[in-house]
Length: 282
Image (cartoon, rainbow, N blue to C red; front, side, top):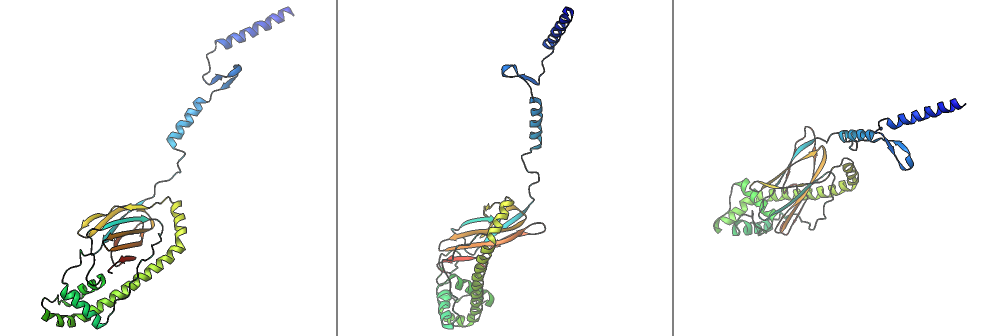
């Protein structure tokens, strides 16, 4: 029995000595009370390195392809103007019209008096005027009538009466055409309000899903009265919205256009397609 006890004591002592002399395991740490636990630092370093390389927090996928878009703004009058334009991925509600414009009268006597006032007594261009002597619409019609007839403007009073008689048919035709254009402008405004009410909520949700945001345009001088802005947009339906503000007149546009493969996004904004014109002398 004594021999057996000595043998067990020697074996136990040998095992303890072997453990004490073995090199420390880098993955073993000693905590409070002498408790030992496995160190997962090496594994964590490998995982962190993998996360950095793979960027697991990002949703996989490429950025959407974009296409060039060019916006032009061209109005007969430009002096002292201020432009403010943005492109939206959803429709924007237009402001309420501050003024309504009655059709120009086609009565001969009324047109004759205006021709005397604007054709003979006030022979000047309206390009840089805040207010014409009659109205901008009448002045545009007169310019068109002169171009079509080739009559020019009378320089002496003896020519004025015959000039009024000869140019009146051209004037009447252009005034009737302008009246129709203004009626069509009002119809476009009413139709767009209806379109906005029916579609803006769904379009805004879709834009948020695709992470599409409005883009501000920087209009630059291209040539004389022509202003230009260029940007790039993903495929879809977009809306260019903005104003040109002059003394006495504000133009407002809200124009939809398509962007995508094989589509040319070249948008011209002018007096004819302005959705609203707010002027003291329109």
